[in-house]
Length: 160
Ligand code: SME
Image (tube, rainbow, N blue to C red; front, top):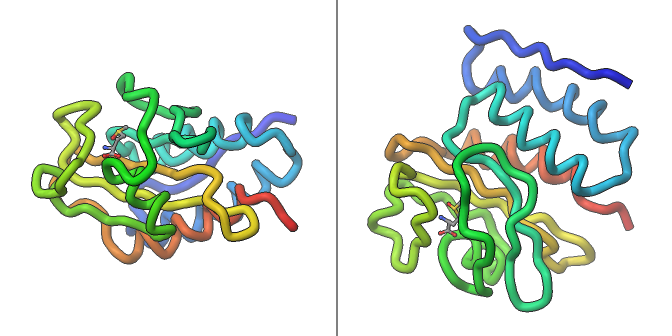
């Protein structure tokens, strides 16, 4: 089946998310392959918001391993508790970093990145992956992003 996205450029950030989410729901609902869905969600977020870097790290044993993403080449492995991604995994919470230069232990895959949001994906209360989004602008992410990106990662979590 072919899919395309329709989100008007002139909308506010919140309205873009509101327009995008039902379309993403339809995009992933017919596909059970996790990697395929992570890949399309990364592409959709890049297309609509033109984020500097957007992608997934997947929990494999004691590390996060790079998954589908859109952007510049990135670190392939992140240890539990390390960097922003490893912190979101360890603390099982959304982490918003207004200025990555001030975050102790931030992993700079690309020095152009200035701010970041990371959301964990869960299966039965365990983190199975994280969605990582980087911006080349300081203080780019806020509670609106956290609220709507949470709904997007929910679409990707396995159902019980
Ligand atoms: N900055 C992240 C590493 C991943 S890259 O940004 C793509 C971190 O500190 O976990």
